[in-house]
Length: 196
Image (cartoon, rainbow, N blue to C red):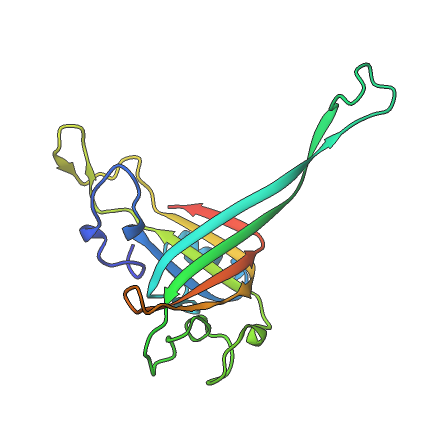
């Protein structure tokens, strides 16, 4: 996929997807604004590729409420379980950089806020986040020889719309490797998946 990760030939050719094949993009707009570019496998030029991410996690959850009725054959017996609304939360752990190009802090990297004094209140428009899981250029067969057919292996693009930063703490740790890590929590709205 040209334009996404151009080193797909260097990604380990394993049966399992690895974190080495992932790229994260962010910007403003909706899924509908970029769907034709995404289906073509091209990252929209209006979105920024976010570097220095050390980990990215996605949590989807929902509750389910037990339902009861009066005068049941067995008092207190659950007669139905109704699922509630889903919640989506993303967490990005990113190293803070020395940078004059506008990508030091997570707010700079996402394009949020003024040129100085970034904070969570500067986000007044929801974000659009994309995760590309890129396919290596070859796969491994059972007899340890390589083939280039990529049979059964696809590139997966996941899109989250209406994303809002809810927390962005920075950790300053002098006992570890001295990096400053910003751990951002993001509430996400709709989710779309494109398989190419």
